[in-house]
Image (cartoon, rainbow, N blue to C red; front, side, top):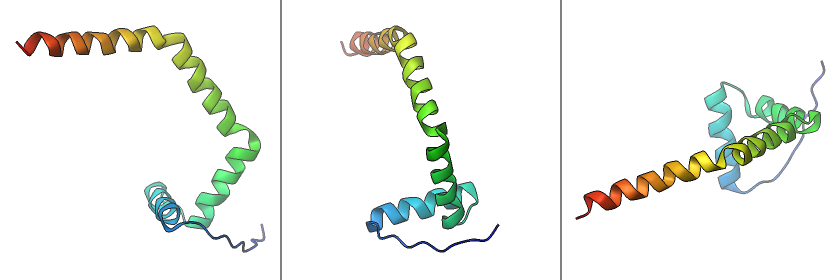
Length: 79
């Protein structure tokens, strides 16, 4: 497939995050950005966020109980 060059200006901190993440994934910046666009336009990203939100909603009490147990355990050792 033929490639087209795009140009964009972003803050340096955003550029550095993109460079690091692309390197972590073993991708060039261009391939990393292409993957982000494809995920976004295919709905993959939205489906993943929705799934995470459903998971948290269904299991929020487990997280709340674990957090409460940690607080209680820490308080018991403070005396």
